[in-house]
Length: 309
Image (cartoon, rainbow, N blue to C red; front, side, top):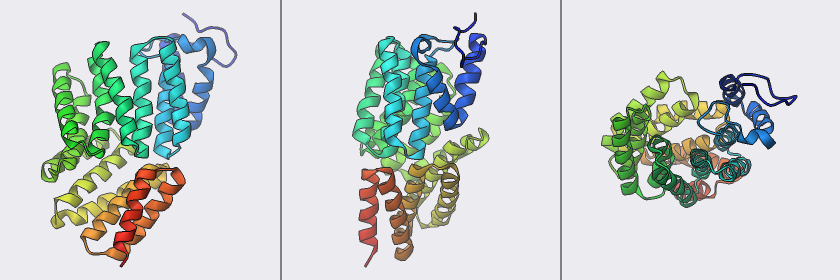
């Protein structure tokens, strides 16, 4: 079957269209913008052999990319466009995926209550629409929002449920949930020593996948865990943060860069290096102010005030 006649859409079989137009172009944000522009009008309802609506998929992945750059307003705009399409076409899987994208934007910005509200709605749809595998995708950002939003017990419970479900389904996301997800939840629950081997495993997994962005976040998680284990691993925490920060700056991931500076500041306070801590908090504050990250800006300013005699 051929695509509908349109000058800017290649005439390809549907699976090939999905592969080339939706996946390859989204490797770069500029290409993602092109994909979003193409999948409008009558093409919004086309599936092209995909389980998800490509018009929603492309906008959601675009929202993720924008969130990683700290372009939250544009990310929410694109994400809500995808949600409107999914809701108009009444496609539960696509609705969940769009909510996943919007929730992730709020998560990266540090707006945990809103991220939780959006992602819990996605979780509820997974249950009512019988989408057990899709729930596993939602569990990752929702558990992270719980962990960072002072709901550690909810994060642990969610990830334990998700890991059990992933094992039953033999789903590959079980490895991410069991390693990175549980490590973040345990860290939030004050169980850093239990989190350490899981964070190390998560870094190994992202390294084997050669996923530069997730690997940089994995380094930050491992560093944050190590900083809470004790002085014997402070040096490792500092090394991992240096590597994560270098990757974040190279990839243009401003939220991660801000978090690296913040975690370095906290680490240097623990090490008694207050002058270096103040410099890190100042760097974090500058990024958070420019990217409109009020929660993390307040954390940076508090750290700066406490580190300066």
